[in-house]
Image (cartoon, rainbow, N blue to C red; front, top):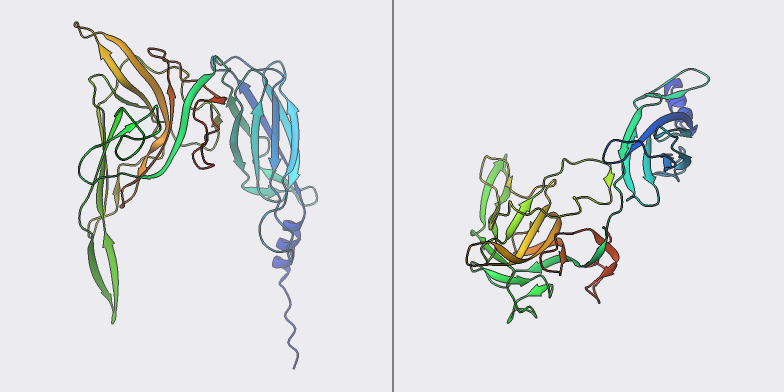
Length: 336
């Protein structure tokens, strides 16, 4: 016997609605770092589209609408899409691009002419002006195994490697000490079935050999959108800490603890030299995008940019002038 299944009217309406692109509108206000409007900035909005029912899973190509800001820094864009969101990016010559902004629509109104809500929300974007980008030694250190456990091992930021005999580095600019407690396994019984839980406890301590060396943390609130120039273009003169301990651990009956932060970035200073009065006469400055990442095996990852000119605190990187050559695809950086 052949069974015929019919869809409910409500489900049929939902499928029909999903297949039809709905109109949405958004206004973007573009300002510089002083709050003044930026005119003639190019604003691109991408209205998300979902694949029509029966065509498979995932998303289709977004419907892009482009506009320019007026004398007050505003641009209003109207587009259509059935994906329930719109992504926004802004660019202008002489400024760093800013992207990753997103508006999530909550519902639709109207029977015949249905429109996404909220209608015409305001998105504010700050463009940072391009200043004085310079050549820097920029590298993404990817899962580099700390060569020893328990004892500090030096990393040479000029060479981008561990110091000899573990690598080709000559001067220990940063010291990494990794330690791990023995792994513990706890068994919980659910009925007649045992479930094993691993409990790990490992620590990475980042320190510096010279007085005055260290990191200066720069926490940035997590956000969907932002400038390609994440940190200020100049490193600070003071506020550097010589030791940064980080621990990840799990104890029975407690949530996992981690000192690794998604919102963390750093400025750093190395090779500091002082005169007999304690004044700094020479130092190298740089920045680190993101936090120091490490795992229970002692593999470390971080992305750093070093200005090789002593006493120059400019850390505005020109991606076309990376002093490191021959980097793998994982080691390359593309951010300013």
